[in-house]
Amino acid sequence: MAAPHSPPKVPSAHWLFRAAPLMRNRGHFHLTEQMQELGDFVDLNVPIKQLYSVTHPDYIKHVLVTNNKNYWKDPGTKRLGLTLGNGLLVSEGDFWRRQRRIAQPAFYKESLSNMVDAMVSESLAAHDRIAQHEGPFDLVNEMMILTSDIAAKALFGAAVENNLEIGQSLIVAMRHTMEGMQSIIPPPEWLPTPRNLRFKKARKVLNKNIYGIIDNRRATSDPHRDLLAMLMGTLDEETGEGMTDRQLRDEVITLFSAGYETSANGLSWALYLLYLRPDR
Ligand code: HEM
Image 1: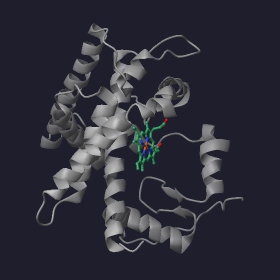
Image 2: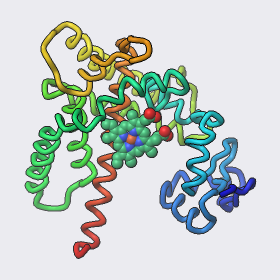
Image 3: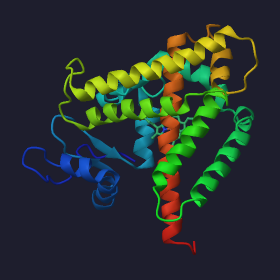
């Protein structure tokens, strides 16, 4: 299916910021409405950037498969590198391909089956925690605790003492990164604003913890069956090289942050929809 050259534009909501306030304030509700209203290829009409929503499977294939060499990750995604370094979400081209090749075996069915016990025991613990609430409670927060505990166990095994410190500093760092992605002109990182200083402190705590875990692993020959062990133990078939500490740090933080908030939000929405339609 040939895509139209000029997709329909979302109408402006502001003379200067055009349709950007709708994106900022209503996020995916806005995207869903525009898709229903204007179709599966839409110009989101924001200033400075060119932003499109592409939802038709043929167009998605065009971007991600047939013509993927013509498309690069946008500056917003690149900004994630402030926290995630050059991990899979940020990297591109040959480096991305190599890292992806090394990480792939960690996601084979047999590798994932090692983690099922941890997933089940953490889910039961979350169930018990939730059952103790007598009144209303914050479901998203409960799901964040559940998925960050599962992510920490899957990545580093049970022996990590600082899950909470890692999780909290990751939240501060990622929030800072996302706020920058949403603002049209983010303030430069070198300015000593309270937000920038908070971010730098969180990133320092995060690095201290993650490099500490990697150093401990390098210093021991005890067997581990978690994702970190798999990433450390896999050599690239083509070059015979493994990952450096820096690459391990970037991939571990990427997997942690890509895995836990997305899953927590998905679970929260699923439970909310079940609550609205218990008959389904
Ligand atoms: C419901 C849960 C999830 C959702 C909705 C989700 C969504 C996404 C999306 C939209 C992307 C593409 C991002 C982009 O390139 O712009 C992505 C990539 C990625 N996700 Fe997830 N994700 C989920 C769970 C997870 C989990 C559990 C993990 C890890 C354990 C994970 C790890 C990754 C990684 C590493 C990438 C980058 C892949 C690459 O470029 O090679 N995600 N995810």
